[in-house]
Every structure is written in structure tokens, then in C-alpha cells.
Length: 83
Image (cartoon, rainbow, N blue to C red; front, side, top):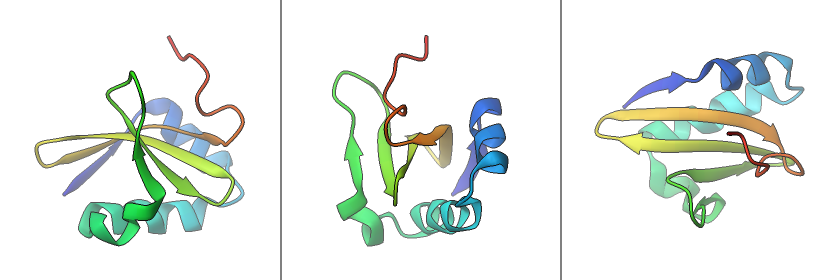
């Protein structure tokens, strides 16, 4: 599965203190999504899913063979309106 990052997600990943761990989990999600099923949840009222990585949240969506990483944010601010 191909992984693509939004500009804001790529910027957040560079600035994040857990960048290495988050990259590992995103790679694992792309290759074996069932392994992280306990940490993945569909967001209510939104087309995205969230992946928990310690106190960070990775908001993503799947389209055909592409995993779109829309945002990476600390737990407290991950679900704020981004419109």
C-alpha cells in the first residue's frame, strides 16, 4: 500500500518527539492493518480513521491502494475542527 502525507501531517511528523515510533506504526498499518486493530477507530461524522500512538493521534483515510495521512497531532488537539 502506498503512503501519502498531507503537507500538515508531514510538517507535524518532523516536529514530533515520537516521529520514529509514529513512522513505524504507519508502516505497520500500511502492511498489516489487522495488527493495529485495537488502536484504530473510525471517527464519527468524518470520513477518517484514527490511529493511537501513545499520546499522539494519526488521522488517516484509505482509498483503493493509498493510505492518506491527513494529520498527526497530540491527543488533546487532534479532533479540533480543521476546516
